Image (cartoon, rainbow, N blue to C red; front, side, top):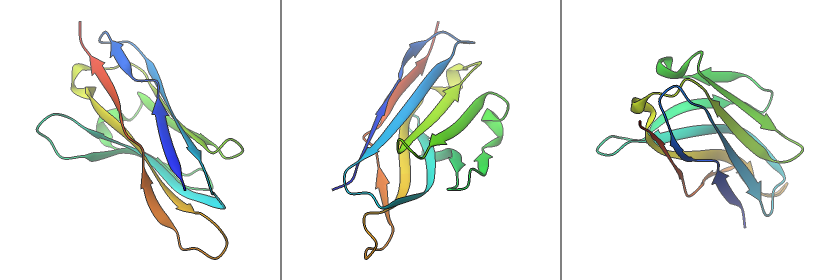
Length: 121
């Protein structure tokens, strides 16, 4: 069984930084694309940033230049470095990954439980 566990959320003042981590564990043969999504109160969940298996990254416009997504394939871990945080970044952040559990299985989509990020003075 595959699990994604996020950590690193919290309360930070505007202009501050946080680093989110997402560790994948369980039966894992290969992890394909990974991404961070967020959902603010009353809003739909949106993709914040994604990274392919080969390291190609993509960001939504509002976080470009402030957030950096990265992955450590040896550790099956995804990161999101968030700098210059703004109140509008406040949301629950979710980790997402396409994972093939074994060589005979299809790739399934997995989600973490979410971690709260609050940017406020």
